[in-house]
Image 1: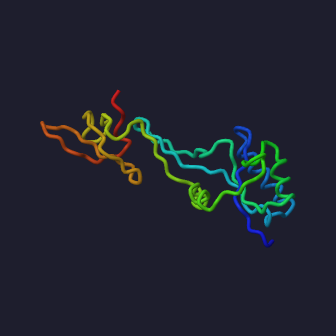
Image 2: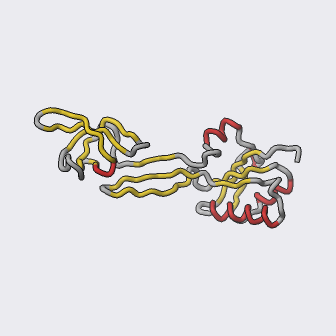
Image 3: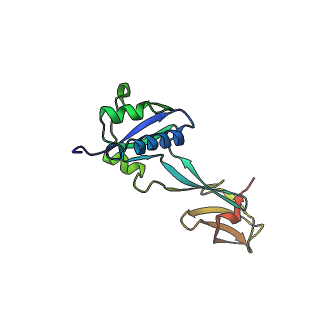
Length: 176
């Protein structure tokens, strides 16, 4: 193939993303079309939620109802993808596929395929209660987060003085 495969966005019925991905991959494998459609992906992000003392980790679709397909656009590849069960069409004017630019592909993090996203029930400047550790029972104000280390700097008042303490996100919760 002289033409280079590009990333295209395919719209699907809600909740059909995984089914569409696996169906396209099966057709590609059965018809030996890896040179036409080398990759199909659903952009995901890792989400960590802190609820009380529990950390829940999971994946979440970045763009529900959309699947990315890396393909060389030909009549055959268009037909295969467009007629996959659950596909409503390509993203583009009049369902004419428009490839993503290199900048858009980089912004989606297609090469890394996931980004870290920690969700907590509070933000910087919020009042929180320390639920565990040596400062259990203290209240304080969140000064900043370190999502890599999953810690927060919390300003607590003890013995009439304010001091900043770094603690795990699992040891603090929003003051209600």
